[in-house]
Image 1 (cartoon, rainbow, N blue to C red):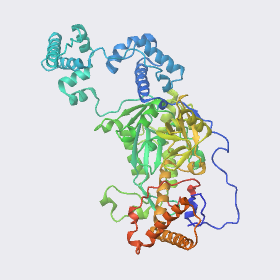
Image 2 (image 1 turned 30 degrees about the vertical axis):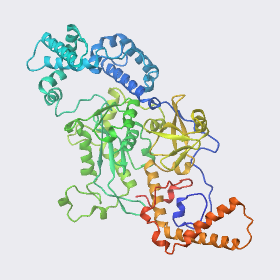
Image 3 (image 1 turned 180 degrees about the horizontal axis):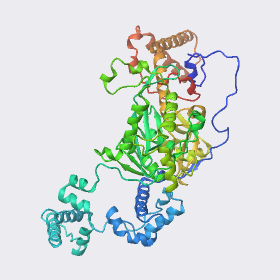
Image 4 (image 1 turned 120 degrees about the vertical axis):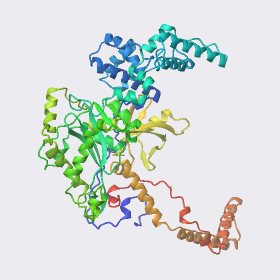
Length: 625
């Protein structure tokens, strides 16, 4: 370990350094000293949860109307769809005039979700039917659709009887909430699915109104994109040490219309929002990086754009607020694949089998799901492929083999199908912003504390700027810390985006240690912190520290004893402090066997925050596993 006792906690000091007679000037990856990041974005997370939910509610109404009338719908179309909206969203849908106002605002903003945020609550959204009476109305409607099939008049009498019994039991004067005609309208508006649900049960209703065994048909690219994860049947080794790292995860986005792969993520991040967002970013942006990173690839990968419908399973990563909000912002409709209906998301499953059976079957290090098929073969011992080599193999095979070859029935070539589809149908929606804007939209959200020193995030990362300091000064009271909302890119911790509540927009704030922060992801920063704690724990010897304190106390005792033999000129305050030091020294000296009372290393609190100022990620790359 280095003898440098300065304030810098450099990871490089943990490892032997090579002698060098040359030095190079350090070039920082952060912005120049004295400059600020010039980034600001508007996002739906700038508003409270109630207003966000209202915006999403309005978006769903407009989305349903666009499916029926197209993007050029009129106010008359909305009025004609009133019954449809009530059936789909309930009785309390906004008026046609309000929905028309939402639509104009949505179009004028170029279809930004934030334009649907309500300024103030307008209109009367209270229920016209008392809450106590609603359950009796539903009970009467269920009796009408029961096997006995009574008339509407008989079902209405059931409602009046239940209201009368309620008043008698609770000593109230609740009136029958609906007239006979109003009750009849409620019955007429009951969806057919609910009618069959009451009569036959959920299983029968699902079986009757769902087409079993076939996916919905598509007419254009990116109309339906399936997303899923799998762990590849291949062990990958580390580039530097050639030790097995394990089996990487593959998150894939698959266009069912052309059978094309539109984007993927390959790495050791298990299924999570991070892996999904990386795959989405790869799918949405053009694949310009392929020619630069993999010049061996002969063909092009033309697939990119924003999916219309994204079909996912019921994993936790697809239920997170970050994922739902990101998809709403990008106007991606998320569809959950029903449980026990695998045929509705079978294309991506078949592609996973294709990769494992055709691409990886002949590569050393392949694992086997069947232990009898493996025999004496040890996949970890025979692994030879690094992560970078696997990325190259996947790109070459994907673009030059899979995307450019016919399927077994010779009915489709993915690249050909893609090029023909975008000529004959609606072209895919491109992302109009920059890659930084896309990463912002796909970022994670958090709420953190802001004080005069800035924002301390993920234990040891600190962010500060003049703009942030001014914002704190305007909103703090007596210098106390305040809560702020932030968005950040989990793949790069160099900067975060802080919500300005006054402007309803996020502004960028850079880390005070940009060289370290720009070089780590959220996960890698955690690994660095764990490594630092582990190193300190291995090298800290508590007994040696206690012995050092004994030497200090003995020295103080001897000094005080020799001074006490002379006439003391100490004042009362200094004498009192000296006596206190002497008492501590005497207690330490009287401890004949101090090692018996020493703290056990397991009792030491190791949860000490580590200051990352000055850390360099290149010095710990050999330790990350």
